[in-house]
Image 1 (cartoon, rainbow, N blue to C red):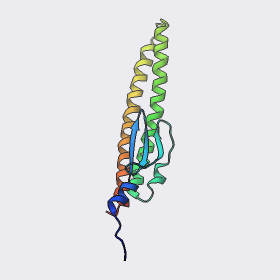
Image 2 (image 1 turned 90 degrees about the horizontal axis):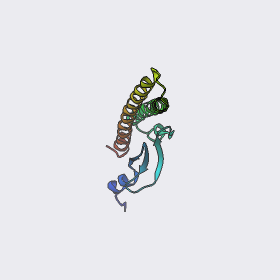
Image 3 (image 1 turned 180 degrees about the vertical axis):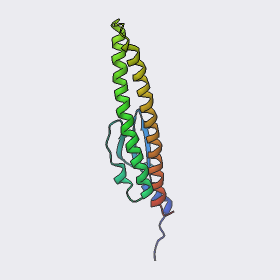
Image 4 (image 1 turned 135 degrees about the vertical axis):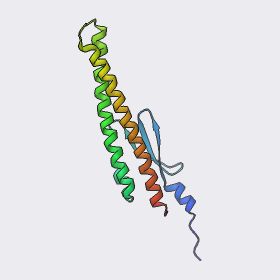
Length: 137
């Protein structure tokens, strides 16, 4: 006698999700499962390999990786530029470059964070497609 598989239980144990916290996200397997990787600022977990069984998920994972790296890099450069501008301003350096550094740094941070946000949207889609394609739908 064959016992039918409980597909809900299998899904609850195997589906991927992420939980974000302060610029990074833990990728978790199952409702209460283990953390299988962490992504975020300059973290290099291979999401593409994790979701390789779903071509649509791989495409979204590539988009995540691209946006996350670009956003992290530009945000870090922007934060450094902003900090230099603030230090120069606090040292009473009446240089014409000080406001340019502050404004440019803040703009770079904003641009970078926008790309990081787009990356997390792609990560969400990658995990959704993986879950969809591996659950038999």
